[in-house]
Image 1 (cartoon, helix red, strand yellow):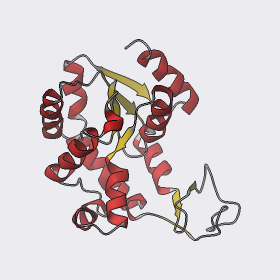
Image 2 (spheres, one colour):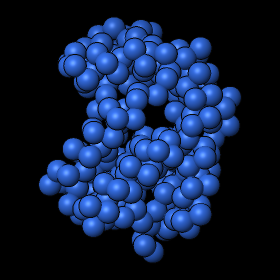
Image 3 (tube, rainbow, N blue to C red):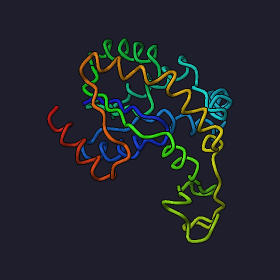
Length: 215
């Protein structure tokens, strides 16, 4: 099956996408991960995208659409995929429809994760990443044994630019302005399901699998 997960940054959709992918043996296609890898590798795309990502703005449609088209045409997406972080605008949704029509595919379900802004800011601003191995931590929910030091490789922990509070607030503003209208778009197609992203992760997954097993 082909799925779309919608939700503001920090809503938990990425975590659930990984779990869904394992259960149903379909790949998670995360635009955020693809773009961050390009930034890390200093590719032409990465350099172009970095200035947008660092200020919380959306990367331009034409760049993201090309990435997605190339990714879902790969062999591992033959039995389905989970789009995590795409589409983010109505124009992207319409372009996705065109791409899928050419491939004789369709989206079976769109899942929207609903979380209060204050909770999102706390979740995101507390995230820390190891500079050496990339392992993730959280100052409140998953702190390292030694402050600022990775448990695994003793690398330095840092806060990503897009996880700083001022950037988060802008990211949420951009999300609401450009992405929330997608819920109406997919609701009209009768393929939208909303879930409480503030609930326990295992409870959310149980709810999701109960729904997806019926598709």
